[in-house]
Length: 271
Ligand code: BTN
Image (cartoon, protein in one colour):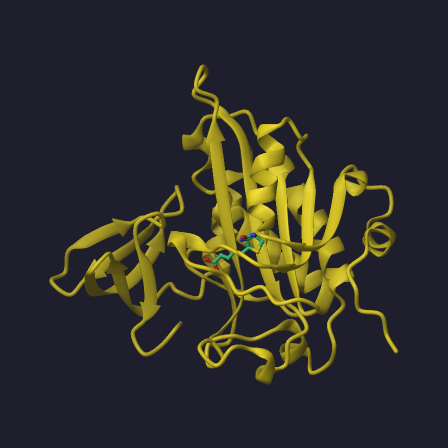
């Protein structure tokens, strides 16, 4: 029988001599790898610390949502960064992470997902994964003390494995490939792509956002924008230099919506 467990040794085999290879920790079960990463970051864990779990009991998504994280099938991954810049210079961190994940999936599996603005990885009309970035500022300097980049990827699920509440909207790498998908290989390519991203994050912001716009499947689509109890329809026009989504409303006016305050839906479904 094939052993599909996540293991530090197998990940390190994929990585070879990589600066972050010795900073990887794998857990059978945690509440949330992001929550654990935030605790360790506050205790001084270095940039490149990577926490991976086989399952999460309290996986978190954007806007306070939960992220279902069953064992044996997904990759639940959090990385600590210490970019030492102002928070304003990191507005594109989620976008940069999404582009890195497109590269990682392409290298591991040979298909490139799309990005549903701002933080969902999609294949066709279905969600493959999501990203949750969290920051802490140094109160004295006002600079970013640490950032935690959290990524959840559906890897090995078959359609029937998804909870009925999300089955119509979710897919996995194995469903795309038509065969099992190796989580250790994906974790290796994720780590390499995130390291490249961390090196170029500040200097190559424009190029990163250009690639984000190419990968973003939301642009050009009619969408519903949900802000609290308010819902309005709009056309997604572009992604601005900070990662905000520029939309045209039905009255012809344009607005930039921010990922911290709104979620979007395709006019006819999830995408
Ligand atoms: C979303 O879909 O809104 C984002 C989901 C992010 C999930 C990942 S799984 C690893 C890390 N730990 C968490 O609790 N959340 C992120």
